[in-house]
Image (cartoon, rainbow, N blue to C red; front, side, top):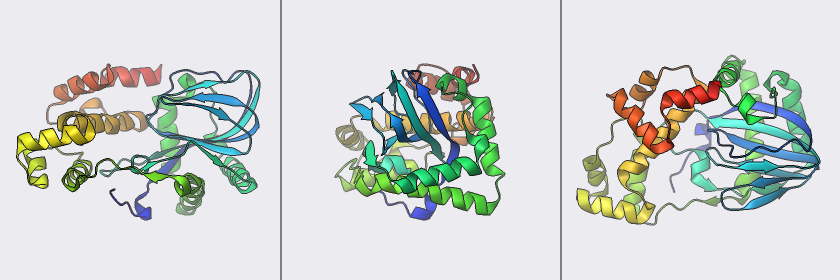
Length: 287
């Protein structure tokens, strides 16, 4: 596992608030480049994840990692605190990729007080609507990002500490994600993440692993069930989604930021991975 020092966890808040629902928290196929944390106060709801279904209960904390397709189901009273955070754009493997987190952990009154204070300190961070299609858009997100950027340092430190406190509950029970037992492939994966904003050549990766290019490709497919090129493109697209989501950066600049000299190729690759172009992705956010 690639070790990440605590000081490099660049967790930033998008939203925090307390939501009251009465059978109206029913949204399908939600997928965003930020992580969600819920603390349930009253009532119950159902969370549908790709591999399982979770019943949300009072007194428990729940986490939905970024880029996780999920749906909500609720037919009665449901009151919960919500916190949306993302990891700042950087060329490293992030916290969510490092661990397999439990979806549910026991919460406490201290967590409730912590979230309550966050809401009181940041009332402007409350969502305008519970519908992801209403708040999950570029205009709203850009405002949230700018608001965080303009906070005084002491407030950023206080907020970051609160976020880390909540994350620590999940981290206590998390299991380090073992991507591969092959030390050569661990070095290759670390190299990819450290150079994701560059044009990564497969020959370079073969040199990192000290094997031939054909053997590297076979080893990589065996360990990660995908080719090196597909893995690299997938990680570049995730970074592109985050940039398209949290900035007003033009698509061409996003491509250059990720090491593409030909932004037309970037657009084709983005569409191959996601099924839509970067422009369409951003247009959906603005809808």
